[in-house]
Image (cartoon, rainbow, N blue to C red):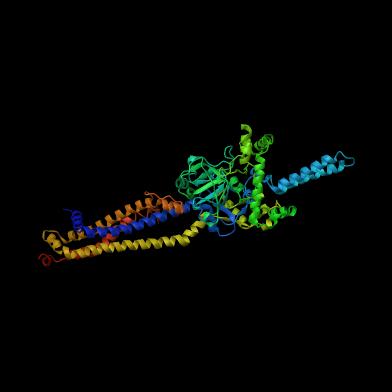
Length: 616
């Protein structure tokens, strides 16, 4: 009969004591495995997610870590905003021209020049006014050229040559019954250009639907894409309409009236994007309380109008402006079909560029489907053609002037990961050079703008892990190892206490021909079997528990944890090379060593047992 079979029969004879001993070992091993896997998978996910397709974040000055946590992981409240012009500093001339022509400064200058041209035409027919009319015409052209040059409409952004990709981000809204999901306003570039895995070039994929579009004939700019976790937990599907919450519903927030149509449901990516809702940034700007008021907006309003609104506070005055805007939009929707057709034709020419050019980002207003109808009662009586035009007018409008736009952050990827582009942009931005973009307009004073900061997310996350997470990890790991050691001591106590009952049994084995080394081996085999059995049970149980608590981990961290996820490997460097081994696999030899150590004392006791004294 083999040593292992004898040891197994001995364990079965002491079933209750052996079972409790193995259970204590299983609990210790399960704790170690759970700590290693959960912490390791989450840590690796955070490290990889901090450099997901971009190597820099541009945001307002403040805590760099808060900017990273808010922008990358959606875990913190947004910091202060930055002007939209900062984003244009990374774009080429074509995109800058499309956006900057929709500004108060440019449009006011054009209106002024048109007035001068009209004056020139009126005065050219009067005697002696021809010279004055010619002077006005020359002055108008010169000022128009000066405005274009001052705004740098036809120039590339100052950092466009160094930036490979720039994506604007706006935050502040939430979604869900408890505002547990962050709403992220962005452009289609977030899905079309951003890479989940830089090495393989893998981008976001969709379980259903498609990515956002800059402009769409059906939904206009009111489109949304939801993460896989949001769609599953909220029961959302394609075609559903969602209404973001302004702020936190539990802290005085309110639900926006504007609804966004879901056009895409993202496939699970294992990142925080699975617990986010993405909307078109132009639709974000058209919602209440999302446009930046001009610095002299209220002053100018009160300068020419006197009424009860003079005594309103800022919030009440803003609500009054929103109400007036909605009334004007409703009045425009009720105009005759001829005016509607003309406006729709003009919108088609302006907002739908040909030859594959990028459509201009547009901003409009849609009345929600509930409680207010999307169309007025008068529009229902018009013919089908007019009705479709009115529908378009209620969804699409002129883009919001850039003086009233703000951003939370900008996701930026330089042309090189380490080099002139990365460090050159970082140093220039942190020295305040982006403020030069504010020189072109008098509606947003440069002196009142906050300087931006450039943050490298990988460096920030690495610093956090080295300073806080790694020491805590080692502390928790040390505590769980101590639990295993205590379990090993339990094996020692169990076997050693059984020696008083087994002295006669061991003496009989010796009398029948078993030598001392055989008895020694049987006791060690019992210790190894108890430790290995408990370890395997604990390891399997830990992975099943990981699968069971995966929804909770995903809700808290956005990281998907499955039964088959293993702890990341530990790297070992040798003179001939390096290799990586999962920390879980190191538990196996560790348990064997622990079992041998705790089995030595009872094995030595059995080895020294006096046969003649214990046979009687």
